[in-house]
Image (cartoon, rainbow, N blue to C red; front, side, top):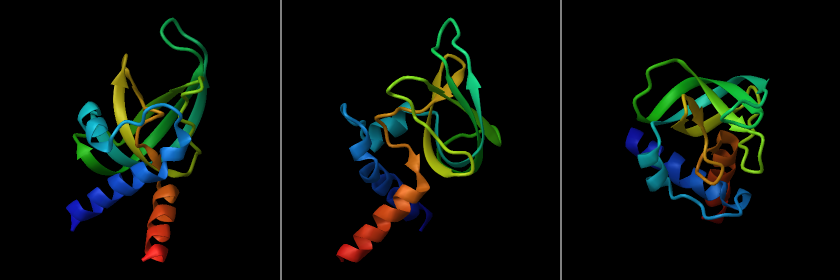
Length: 133
């Protein structure tokens, strides 16, 4: 049952976010293999960060790990950086997300054209599918 739930989260989540990206979307399968972990997490804080030598300015999100869908997780919280570019992955404090964590220069980032999404999008997709049937 857990495997079925995980597959449902990943498949419906990737379908829900397709309209947001204008470039080629990464398949969930490829993104899982390129991610250190896939988690369901709650955004606990958002802190603006100034530009540094290796990144533009952006936001560092503190994300509490609620559950692990794939990979190994060695901490209860992650700091996820979203650079201030058109490819930013904005998140809202207090909301829940399925996140494909990708390490990048001692930080974790989210691929804007990937399959990370807010869990409410998943619930809306599941509801639409149920209505169609």
